[in-house]
Amino acid sequence: MICGEKLVNSDWLFYGILDKEFFKRERIKRLKVLRGVFFTIIILFMLLLGIIIPAALIGLVVFFIGLFLNNQYRRYKTNFKQSGWVMAAGIVLSLILAVAFSETTETAKDQDIEGTSEQEEMAKEERREADEKMQAEEEKLAEEKAKEEEAKEQAEEKARIEAEKAEKEKQEESERLQQEEEQNAASLGLELVTVGRVVDGDTVETSDGRKVRLIGINTPESTTKVEEYGKEASQFTSSKLTGKKVWMQKDVSDTDRYGRLLRLIWLEIPSDDMDESEIRSKMFNAQLVLNGYAEPSTYNPDVKYSEYFRKFGREAREANKGLWAFGNEGTTRGDLDYSGSSSAAGSSSGSGTGNTSSGSEADSSSSNNSASWSSENQSESYKNCTELRKVYPNGVPSTHPAYDSKHDRDKDNFACER
Image 1 (cartoon, rainbow, N blue to C red):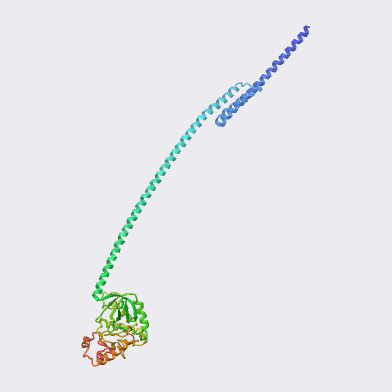
Image 2: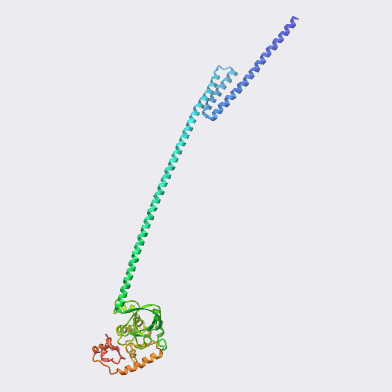
């Protein structure tokens, strides 16, 4: 019985010891789990610090070293027992580094922010300065443009004033010249007219209906009686005078027996109406003779330009111009004819040949008058050229009753020419 009780007690003791070991192992397991969880939390925390602040990873490394040493101590019972202090140092180091570098980072951020702010301020200042500079340049450009426009306006105004002044001076000069021309025209006895139409080479009609016979010349007939080169002479006169303003000049006679005005025609007012160059260039009567459209034909008392006309006629004849191409006596009557009825055989004082306005009747009258005038004056003679020039200042052609070969020393069929 006693033995049985002892046996039971020993069983309970055995089982009690087993329970203690069991509970001890369970407690150790739980401690290991808690320890693992704790270390895991510490490691994760330190990793988080290391991610945020990389310098804190140094503390994590120290912590792992301490953890390794602790593990060695527990397994192999090494002599190093301060592994917990190493791990604690790693944790503290991570915290210190995290805090330190956090402040540094914050400071750097603040500095960056301040730097950024300063940069922004500098950028704003630069933009402001650039804007001010641009505005100043724009104002300068605007001012320069305004000055240029003002200078341009002043130049235009000056040019306008100068142009007006020049125009005024030009107008005054034109008026002065016109006044001088009018005075010169008045002194030369010139009358301004407009040619309305051309009758033939040496007869025209003014716009107010007056017929004008050009004196000192004779063109071939082109109307009722047609002579060689008459149409050409008429066309030349038409091209030069029709619709044009010209100046008429009277010599001595005013009209012929047909009521035509006896005139010289000037295309321009001459400064000297006896200057040969101006006669050649400005007098239309002279141009007809010079170009071979007319022969010189003198009738007293209109002899002012007869000497020039004969000179021009000789020039045209020598050059075989116009009507002179048909022979040395041309195609109509004139001062340079050698034989036959002459231009002087027409009516006295500008009765004239080439009377196109009177038709065949005028030509017949002119021929009859020529015959009677020649017969009545056959006895006309003069002792010398001095006496002859008292009546005929420019001499007479060979067909004239007053002609005498003794007065024609150069044998050109014209006596006592000047």
